[in-house]
Length: 340
Image 1 (cartoon, rainbow, N blue to C red):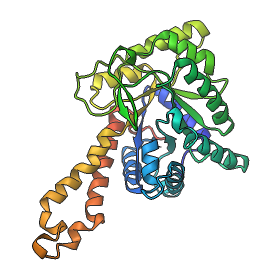
Image 2 (image 1 turned 90 degrees about the vertical axis):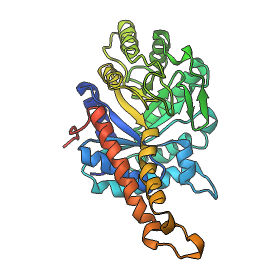
Image 3 (image 1 turned 180 degrees about the vertical axis):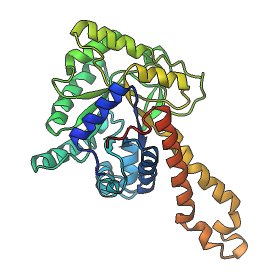
Image 4 (image 1 turned 180 degrees about the horizontal axis):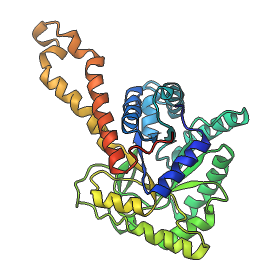
């Protein structure tokens, strides 16, 4: 199947919300990690989301120029071609983009997609994220209003992060403290500024103790039941039941119960990066240690080309990461839910 059209992406999100499951959103930084994500979704018979952060886009742009737009566009164009060989629907998304990178990342990509839509084509990406969590909520929502209008015109869904997620993600960092919990007032102000669909569809990354990076279960106090409070608080004021499509950030180390509670309370997308990075790297490290004298020209020898050929260890990395994506689909209940 091809990359999801705007209509298919909306259907994916509607199905997830109604079925109380979520799509893994897998960060990729290369064509190889892209294939690993696509393979995992296909093996799980789950539609899914592939996303590129600002750091990932910079890496994809090459270390000579480090151009984020070039990197994101190149991988997206590649994805539009290779995704047709996988029997699932895939949405392309750009991850965390703070204020100082909007002009060098999201805004140019929105303009590019607008040109495509004006020419009768689908947008290059299906959604973009604006991470205004480092700004005041007033400034955050003001910029979100502008971006939502542009996204709607280009048939794109906007993702907004209205309050901080702890830890560090591509240079945006927040302390782990009580500010990591979105309030009902925050949610009401968001609905007042962005509407509840009539101004354009958006995904909401609300904070319920989330922390980016690596941590063990119990080290972070997650309160996914808070999402129910946010929905109910906004529903009571605006008369629309279950108004938000929530995104789960910083989920590494989450327990099955925490994930299940988040799904029951409206999460339709869960970002996964740390775990898939490790899954990709682990078999490569194993291969290098096991074949030390083959991958290196030790003591003047020639080594073994078959062991240092990137295809040899690259296949192991792809298979391992794909398996972790399959696991994620199971955890988020998206296994077997692909649109036929």
